[in-house]
Image (cartoon, rainbow, N blue to C red; front, side, top):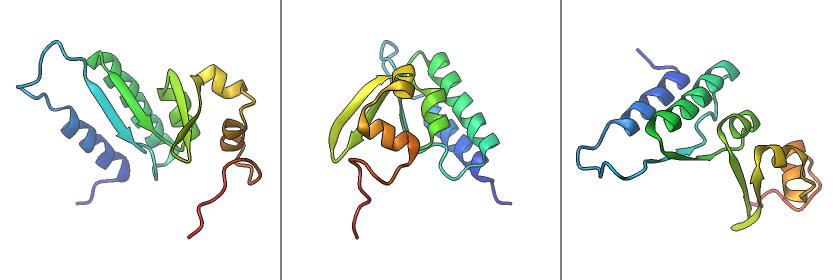
Length: 122
């Protein structure tokens, strides 16, 4: 049978977390997630977000989550970095993200077509 999108994401997490016997026990794990909730329904996305937070806590590591999904950003991050055009445009806490007047963040949060970010031309 076929695995659902949410189940496929969970399987990929499990594969990534299988312990490496050669890993230095003193090294803090760095977990990288690239669009972990893209294409998932809201319930499956919440489960994945919860798994990211729990995994980071249990592993006593650091997670880097790349996402365009607001709930994923707000539920998994302690700090947020906004990149655009290959440059850092803003960084701050989740609370700062909700209240900043930085034009890049405001445009991203609101989805406004007017602002410093323009669609890529093909």
